[in-house]
Image (cartoon, rainbow, N blue to C red):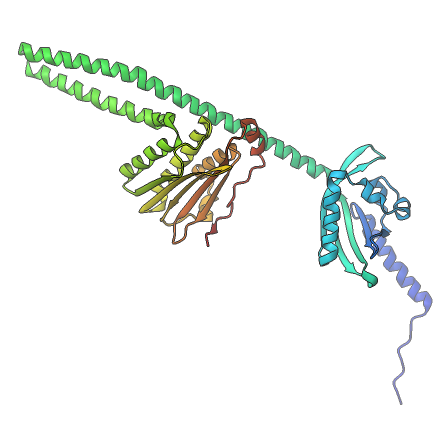
Length: 394
């Protein structure tokens, strides 16, 4: 004797259950910000919206009935500059059946206003070659406005930073020249006077103690002249006035002499055609990179290479030391690296930190040639520093 079949629910019970599911769905949709929708791309290229939630009019300025009647109106809402990206994203999602995520602007005629919307949906292949997406559209105008304000703020900060660096370099140049010309001239005059005094003391047979004092003052003047010369060079090397190549050659020799690390310099051109501000900024980046190597790298060999390319100038500083860790970049007091990055950014360029083959670190700076300063400042907010995450060189 076969077991009895389970009782089948009657149509009323099914209807009640369906109504409960629909009520739960409507409750979820009504509390979801934005527009919940279904969108279908048919095999013949036509489109339709099988489902549109009540948020349609609030977001698009069109009722669900209006969009059902003429689905192509949605494409008409999208600003002409953004339509291609919308269609490309739709076709890519349909071809690969990947999630469709798109941001763009629409013109809402009801309020005479432009909105930024975000569309996120999941594709499903249908019979006959059609594709249906289930998803949600949201208004992201506020977040886009915040992004725009942040971008403008960064641009203003970049301009301020560049101005501060420019003023600082001008002040350094002024102080270096005053130290060299005023103090240097006065010290030279003092040395000449001391020499004259020493000669008279020798000829008059004066007290030997006075002669010793004269020799001490003469030696003190010599040491002071050397200190003035060193301070002037630290503030702004006069060799910078001869060009970046000469300045980097001098800096590399000074580094090798003072630190005792073998350092080589190569340039593919003697004239890199940079203005004074760009040349000074690259020189300061090189100085900071060499200082970091001397303090932290534990290197025995350093290479500095300057190259004038067709559209860029590239400065590459490599060492065979212990390398730099990501944690070192994230240190709050890592002002050397940040200063280098800010200088590169102010030039509208990129600064890249990477691991050298065989160990060590490579610092690469690239800046565009023959670029107007104003354009560089405007671009600074959007300029990227490549290698934000240090990656090994293959």
